[in-house]
Image 1 (tube, rainbow, N blue to C red):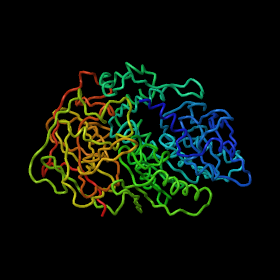
Image 2: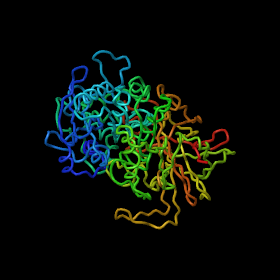
Image 3: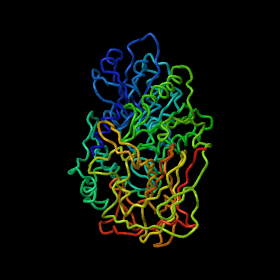
Image 4: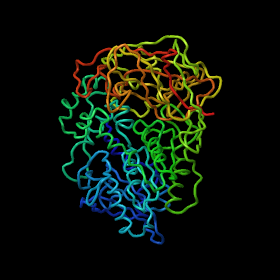
Length: 614
């Protein structure tokens, strides 16, 4: 998977705008600047100003590590702003290469922590934002003194930092799929489990040291085989990646390997801890099927809400992959069709009115506190708070013979499976060296057939059931080793009788489809503390609890609810040796088979906890 090239191509132009370059050339003037920060470092900044000088304009700004190109005063972007509506309405658009990337000076630092004790010339991403905004409102003619920020993924992180900058001109911010915590739930770790496929594909290029400012990106890993599953198995233990491929050239990869636990390094990079005293209006946007930063969108909203009483703070979650709201119509994803163009609707009825109101004084839009798309019901739902108080917490318990129900178990029993690191469960069907985005919603029948995957399901539903809110897994397990990973997948099973349909020229066999709704993984040694890992006692029943990011989904009458449990998700995540040790330093010989048991007893009631919409 050429992950870096994909990111470089998409993020600077992350927009579904249909504005052609001719229109932008005719109606905007481009200029390029090096803006000095408080420590003297100069950041490369591109400004597009409307040719029409008869009125003033607010600023829409994005800071990015993915290039503000094309470079050169006579080379124009073909799209500006979050969507095409912004271009024709008229805004001043500003793009800035962050410190140490592309044409900006300085040294880049991944998810640079905020310096809460800074003074004088000391800087962080919040001060760089403040200094850039201050220069813009004082030096770019024709601005009305109001600035809005938006950005997807890493630019979403910089948007969060803009909300924390404290500059009075920053009035509205939309962090979109914002990078928020890279150990607990975003991108490169989930609950301490390392997402090696994304990390290697991304950092093999993005993480290379840039000797001097440049307009060019750096190449990443080119897979020598179309089969990523076989390739990552051939690499063996995780430490072999550096020895065989990276050769200590990637600073952040080394930092990843040096910090296997949730220590001070990672805690300083938890953006939520700084989200206090926020003044701009916030609208966080994310996708329920975002493979990178679904967690970040949900948790950014919650942190903003928790730490800033009275803040104009909103959340939008749609049926989207990473950035899907910003490009394409959003009328389908993977094999699943939606009843409307959800991305277009969001751009026109939510995003654009939000910025128009706060930056141009347009009519106040009637936007819900939380706007969530329910795929099962194929409709948007509005909530006055999130998680919603309209949902009743219920437990869905595991039972013998692969059954689940809302009734607690009464007898004794368990299922068991052998987890073999030499033959891990694949995360997606087929042969590919690309981490698809569609795996987040894909048919799970290919894993349901494996002996190392436990499958539980309800009887056919005789009425609709709507999940609304976070999902918590409560597993009672025993293992023959001293560590193990657990992956829990929530699945909507379609009726066998549904007819096939054609989507994008391909036939979808929707009868019996096992649509992945939510999946999450947990490294068992962190079950009691992410800071202090603990070994399992072999063969001793132990509770493992973890959080699966929130959902809103209606399981329709005639469908079934399925839960799958497994202990590998390869090569999306790294393999657990199933021994208690520092996995980043493990040797090939450390990986062993282990037998895992899942209990469903009155005293050991494995279950998931969900909100059921009343």
